[in-house]
Structure formats: structure tokens, C-alpha cells
Image (cartoon, rainbow, N blue to C red; front, side, top):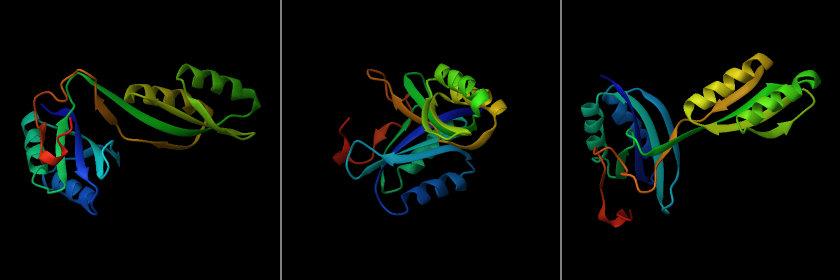
Length: 179
């Protein structure tokens, strides 16, 4: 049975490391559902969050293969309980005078922020889990979505929780063992 896995990969900031990681997954026929990359709390390291579907054993094997890349410091599978998942969307919605109040009411229900306004549009920002973002977008569609950009999933283990469900969580280099 294929499951969705959220892999968090801590890597050294080196040119081409993202390409090597994506190539490794492609060679093993994994489709990446979502990928986000950003700086981490540790200088010189970036955090890559990958969402892939696969058998538990296959994903664990991919995690082991990732450690063969020199720039990979740590791989954690956050697919079990005890993690917080978020996505973000920026959406520009048609909002003329007669519908603006309704758009703002719905935005308020989802705790969306107004980032920009013109006489005919509103640009909104919403964050939440995937289902919340999808629901928000479905509520905005009847007004006319003019433009939209949605991030991939980001994830972090909750405090006091195991950082993974027992798979692939190990450090590749003792110099970064600051957990």
C-alpha cells in the first residue's frame, strides 16, 4: 500500500544539491508531489521538505540512498503523528463593490490576510493544512480567481515528539548533531 511520506532533508548549501536529490528520486521512479526549500536555523544548511508517495520500505531505502550524497546531513520522515504541516496560498480574487464584503467575510473565516487591494481585486494570503487551503480556494472560485500561487507542504516535528516514526532519522555528520 502506498502512503504519503513527508521527508525533511537537511543539506549543506552547495550548488547543485537540489538537482542531485531530485535526480536520485527520479532514478528510483518516485514522483515528487511537493517540494519546498529554504534556509534552516543552522547557518550554511538548508531544509528541503519533500512529499512523496510510496511503500514504507521503498521510502526508507530512498532515505538511505540520500545519505550517500555528501551534502545530505540528516533525513527525517515526518509521516507519522506528532508533526505540524502547513501550506500557503496567495490568491488574487475579483472583488467588485457588490461582492467585496462577501469575499472579506469568507477570508476572515479562514484567517486570510489582505495583502493588496484595487477597486476590482483583492490579493489574499492564507495558511493552513492542505485541506484548509483547498477549501479556501473552493470558496474563492465563484468570485473569480484571477491569479494564484500555492506553496508545497512544510513540516516540523512537535516539541516533545519523536522526530520521525522510527525510519531514516540519523545524522550523516557528527559536526551537525545539534538536536
